Image 1: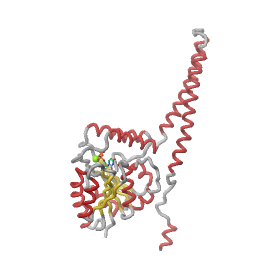
Image 2: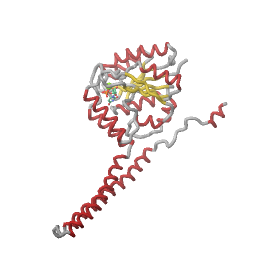
Image 3: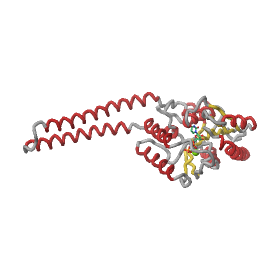
Image 4: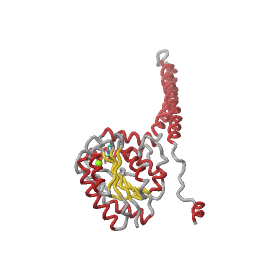
Length: 321
Ligand code: UDP
Ligand code: MG
């Protein structure tokens, strides 16, 4: 008998895609159950993220007619990351493994088999779905999304390249994930921090078959900003380094203006003003950076992230045996 799988699908105004998604997921789930890869208690859990259309009614109908489907509804729209968080932490109560995916079937559901295999046969606790190519995305989406990953890397955030939120996680990982209590959520940055054996599965990203993207540029930029500011203190380091750099320049300017002064080529007061401007701005920039360093520390302390996670403890194993 296989493990209980819950597929968590956040939905925001997705009435146009929900029936087709349900149809395809039903076929997939039934085949997984038939092959014995997952338990027959496995389900698809739709998370209604405060939709303004008929989405929640559809979810209720679907789950009434088919025990393969269930749903939860958030009290209002909280955004994709929070909807996903609600889904993962709720599904974890009933499931051994949870897979998160989008409602629009852009993530190829056939990758689920491979994800489950990696969990069942290779003991992987996290399996990241990674896009092979972005041929089918619009030019604009492709360029913005790819710059997003490159910029994140540059800013010192450890993300899996071209992985969105299509991933398998074990109950164990989700139990640890629950201890990351941060409010500014950037899920795909947190999972690599948790550790445990993980792997990637490649798939072809499809076009959204109906409805329109709920991730316009504005939301994408907000996600990127959250990702950087929640995971990296590099921006603060830039300010600090800039301060040091300006202080260095001010020393050069000091020498330069003294030489010019000694050569008698200046008007009265010029040397003093030029040196003051550089020195004082350098000190200011440096001080801001210094304060920033402390703010950064305070920020990471307030997140209260777990400082370590134990994957195995032989002491406990002994007790059981
Ligand atoms: N979504 C959500 N809440 C929101 C915005 C989006 O739950 O506020 C869901 C949406 O229903 C979909 C997933 O997040 O299942 C990804 O959104 P979308 O496909 O529009 O993003 P894109 O693929 O264009 O980046
Ligand atoms: Mg999509």
